[in-house]
Image (cartoon, rainbow, N blue to C red; front, side, top):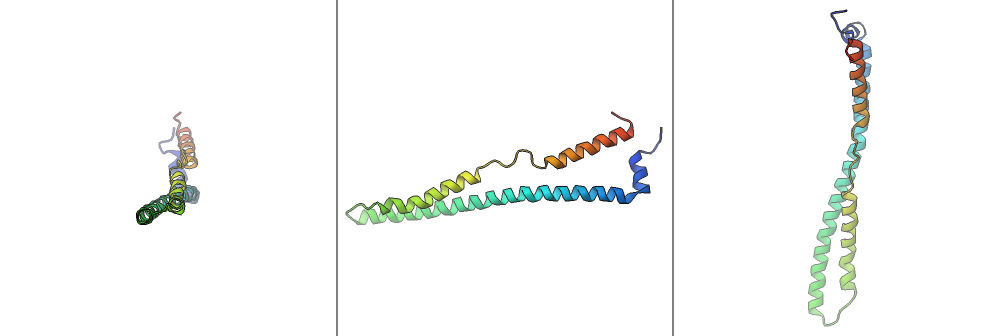
Length: 126
């Protein structure tokens, strides 16, 4: 049995193979982080839209209450106008509350597990 793990002999004799492997890991991590970042960005935009729509709803509802108190007659626009940003806030809230993908970085984890298993096999341990 050799005193040096096979990984070290590859590191010494063929370092370009190890660097290619590490570059593959970096590319895979970047790809998965980009897709996850896109999802997080969408959620952040949805939360911002929800907040803006809620503030606009409160402002328009306040204006509608003041106009309703001043005028003697009721008009349907006093309900409809604040309802539009309220509906927008509801839609944005639903979008913002969506679950992120449950298995984030699943491919990277699977690749790491496969490499660990291969190293254990090379080292003679099951």
